[in-house]
Amino acid sequence: MIGFLDRLARPLLKALDPEDAHGLAIKMLKFAPLPPAPHDDKRLALRVFGLNIPNPVGIAAGFDKNAEVPDALLRLGFGFVEVGTITPMPQPGNPRPRLFRLDADHGVINRLGFNSQGADAALRRLATRSGAGGVVGINVGANKDSADRVADYVQLIERFAAVASYVTVNISSPNTPGLRNLQQASVLDDLLARVVDARERVAPNAGPTPVLLKIAPDLSLGDLDDVVGIARSRRVDGMIVGNTTVARPPNLLENKIAKEAGGLSGRPLYPLANRMLAETYVRVEGVFPLIGAGGIDSGATALAKIRAGASLIQVYSGLVFRGLGLIVEIKNALLEALEDDGQDASKEQDTLKEFIGADAAAVTAEPWPK
Ligand SMILES: Cc1cc2nc3c(=O)[nH]c(=O)nc-3n(C[C@H](O)[C@H](O)[C@H](O)COP(=O)(O)O)c2cc1C
Image (cartoon, rainbow, N blue to C red; front, side):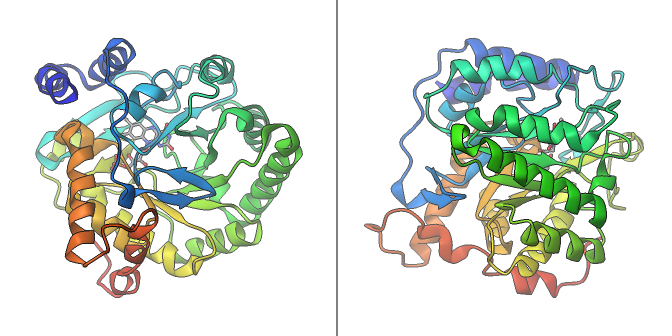
């Protein structure tokens, strides 16, 4: 059924303006009669952030910005879903066009700018699925014209903790002017202190809510030292590395579209994202787990991401070019890697752990990616 839908929809989606195609994909997921989530091989299961996750393949933030289809996404076979970015108040984002496909490069540029229906709309939807199970993380961000951006994050943690498997503090979107300044050491320390404090305050009612920090791949290594140091001292539960890049690798084929302002994702982001993931992994020293995102579009790139330091991975742009078959391809590749490794097939959960970060030191020793 999913393969059929995918084959039917992809030529149509590719013929449309990218943002119209995205809107149609959300509608299809809302109304398509999807079968229940597939049963994953037990060897793919992991316990991360105190959550039981059936497989490490998640869908990254930005696909389901308004929490419209988290259960449909779980049914497609994702091990976890991250909805958002959700802002406190509704806001339209930047004017269209603001989403571009770099077909020859298998890349995407977006400058959506946190188009969001706002917290109330997302909360209403998430409340109706309470008790539905599945790991659904909520990615939160500040409104563009907010007078106090830190207060935006604090109120979103307070409001969403009860319906979130985890909350991601997104300070790395390049499309809200000044947002990434929240990654600067003094500001970040205050932000994380207040966010973690908010999480503790609501915990008696909301239960434990892991807080993750999502960073840009464009940080300098000096800034990364600071960010990881603060994340460790403020005891966040994990980091996502990372968001889209404002850089444009020199070898892009779609030169003209590459000049569009915004964040680049997909295949051209992979080398930088993987390097920053490994750089983060060696700095974190196992204190908390990482989610790796950026340019995963095959079983091989997914496994390499885990070997560079990711406990879990997220895909987005790869789905545009490879379709939903990518999910199964990645799971099969991970199982194959376990078998090649001579793993005991009767072992359950956390079998993948031995791959996590196995190549991190080697990746950080390579020449810096162009
Ligand atoms: C169209 C689009 C919208 C996105 N929106 C968000 C967002 O709202 N919040 C966020 O944290 N990341 C957002 N991202 C970034 C992705 O979550 C992911 O970090 C990035 O695209 C790298 O993964 P990929 O190469 O697999 O796409 C968006 C990406 C794309 C392509």
